[in-house]
Length: 321
Image (tube, rainbow, N blue to C red; front, side, top):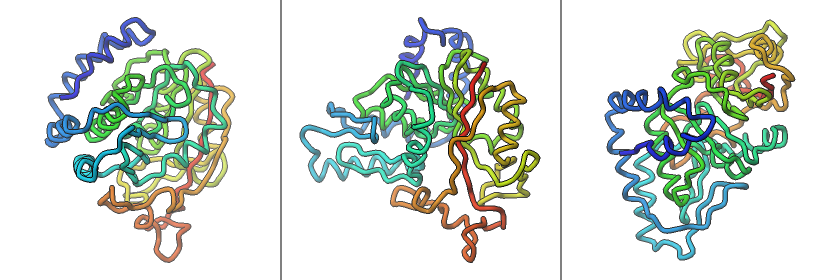
């Protein structure tokens, strides 16, 4: 089974040390409540190759072997990795295998990277990190330590599978908890929250939780669904939005900036705003489920299947004073 002892040792002499007062107990409790398939998913990691690879993380997430795998070895690697489907955030290029995930998460990374503060030498938190694609890109930009939090067991196993294929890199760690379970550590130089806010029943509480993880002067990078409109415009979908049940509030950019300022953030600015395309989110061989094309009105791609504005995302940068 996956254990977190090395992470505990790694943070024991850092500003994250106070987390050790609660984290081990929380993770023991998490282990008692894991998904029924968790043991099967975690076991798959044992079957992955351990050969040392040449790793690249700054332009894409890639591990390349000096001696390529044979056709049979490649087939086995694909088989094991496909036991961890669906793969949603990526892509990954590992040992000659292209994991073509549902999301081209590199598109989002390329949009926000020119606008954020340099990550060189920083301690970073990625909230709702999924399988950890962006965490590896943060390491590629020189981050000293990246901690991702996401309670989904499958994402943890996907992350640990990729970590093993990246020579067991210990600069990034995924902790299977939600941010509401974290004490205010005030220890991270940069906090990312991407694709999370609209899933929160209380968005201002989420923004405050993010702020409580930042050092003074630390930077928040917030990416979320938005609508067009003014400072008082917020979409509250009825049952579903783009077939998602758990979407609660989708603000306009001015409303979102107002929320952040009410929570005490400074220097709040929108640096990017784009509609999600079917090139960025689509069905692949690594995903059995539906994807964006199935969530849009088949006669009008500017609307979701429920009749709401089609997904549009903004990147907001803010500072903890």
